[in-house]
Image (cartoon, rainbow, N blue to C red; front, top):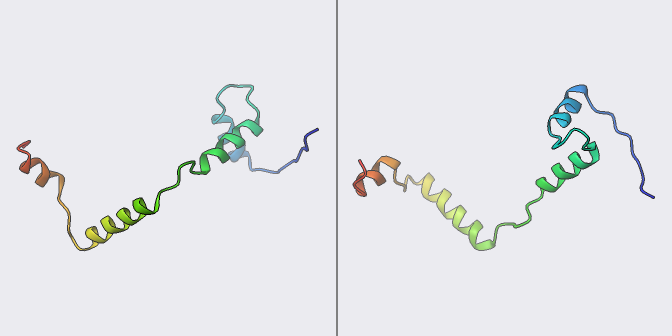
Length: 78
């Protein structure tokens, strides 16, 4: 036997949940469960990926980057 909990939500939020239903008879429990599952990253970033992102952000702050136009010109696409 499963436990049932009643929650109070604003009418606007209920309307939003209604719009997220994949089919008319989908329960709110199914909608909320799907949303909760989407909130968790099933494949977290590796330490190496995080390090490379931090390096790229540091490069951006130092102005070390190419614009799209510069790349296209170098590749002869302009």
